[in-house]
Amino acid sequence: MKKGKTSILLSGMTVSALLVLSGCLKSVDPPAATPAKAYVSIMHLAPTGPSLDVFFNEKKVSNTPFAPGNVTVAYNAIDKGAFSITFKKATSDSVVASVSAAQYDSLNFYTLFIYNTQVNGAVTAVRIKDDFSNLTANKSFYRFFHASPNTNAVDLYMDNVIIESSRILADNTFSSPNNEFAGITSGIHTFEVKLAGTSDVIASLENIELAAGNAYTLYLRGLTGGTGSSQELSLGILRAVN
Image 1: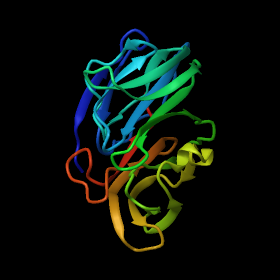
Image 2: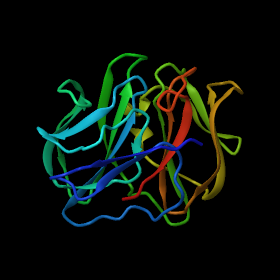
Image 3: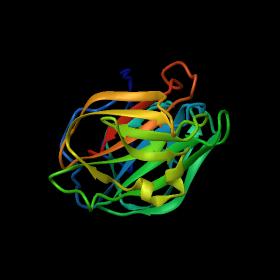
């Protein structure tokens, strides 16, 4: 599994650094909240998009470009309030994608999901409000995002058992149940992504530890036939933690 790190310091509205990582994360405690703060995570899964600078309203809050294929390893605490979020091509004033002004409430968690609508096509950003209300201490929880713009429908398997069928590019953006976390058995697991209805494995993660009471986002990123850290087709996993 290939790993790379970048850091983005969110100033003004935030109190912590955005650390971005390609790869899987070891088990840590589930997310906890600090009163009067909202929490935001960014997933830059647009493989043919540029590196991005991040703006809250008109204020630049990143000091390092946010490269394609990277995700924040943790939620970042921000001041609650209503504001828009804009992603500009790094070191330029060119707007790549944006999220309309919305309220970010204290003690709430949000994911900003960035993806290509097609190879070399438009980059889109959407806001997802993450709901952990159904988490229990006796199970692990997961959801799956398909973010490969030239990969057809896929099935997701855990330990050779299918758990997601015929998932297509960014279907979580128009089918809200795909943003919800579903319960699975905790422990050590192997995940495989196969082309829907076939035995063709296109990406996998082996010996992944899922802790009880924790929530995870599995995501297919990159391009079929892609090479390099930002475009190689791979399966990633992100633990919800702040």
